[in-house]
Length: 368
Image 1 (tube, one colour):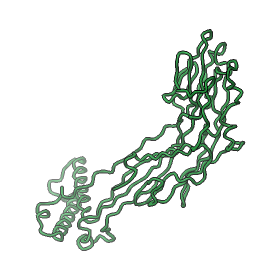
Image 2 (image 1 turned 180 degrees about the vertical axis):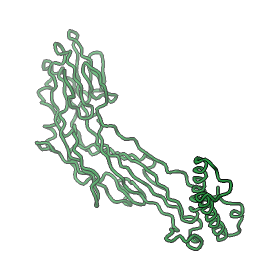
Image 3 (image 1 turned 30 degrees about the horizontal axis):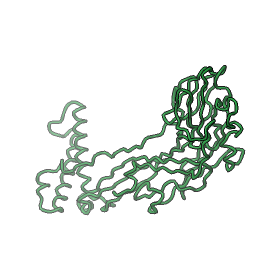
Image 4 (image 1 turned 180 degrees about the horizontal axis):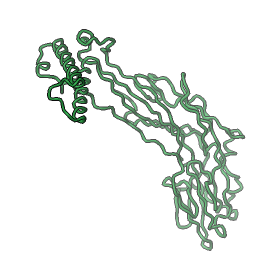
């Protein structure tokens, strides 16, 4: 099946932020490269990424080779004779993770005559801990792409007799296959009634024989009524909003093709609403996202020793299509909140203060 999203491991990434606040570097007008040096630590504050996991089920029906003879030889009605593939969404779950906010870069500088605190950063240089070590990740576990392959198709030819295989026409093969099915049923009935020759005496052997007969009949029946295979697959979609959005298309879905990119009009749209629950207007991003600019006055005493964190805002996330809502959930988002000063004297007498941050929302988890 030709599907555009196979080459991207079924992951659709949506960047919603068209603009960001310029980075403020304390005591330096040049852009910083985040990380640690002997006399300074540069770190990002996080931006919260919403991760949607779309769970789907693919059902593939393959008609049997003898489907046209099902009514004649086995009295099977309503047997489908055309191949069919269908997809359905079984559920959508939401998780979050942190990513560096390129508009929120800060630097702590250390003086020779003061104790230097221990600063721990994540692999992405997001501020994680001060004077302690992180015990566990802050973000919710992001479910990896899941693909559950269907069980192997039953091969009816493994149970066909030589007479069936050597038949000169499909009609004759269907007739002999039907007779073999009736023979299997008769053998099973004889075992149940205790009339079979050489009937095993122990229960386990009887159970094994019955299972084998059931397997043979089921495989041969697929030549008439076809086979249905079910496959489970999950797709991840990442959304990084800078502001509330309404009826944003996150992906498209087709009952014939499954999950599709937003620009593939073969599927119907699935939308997302992200609304802020903050008491102040989210559009005042400059006021919310930047701390007091007085903190950044060049040469101000100890301004490069301030430590900053996020106070995340809360948002309601709703995912839906034309027919049904898939989820409605409230989550904290770093970029919907504000940036605040944690400590104005992280060095010196307060250098033994232990602080742990949530690397998904930037909030202070604990301070001691």
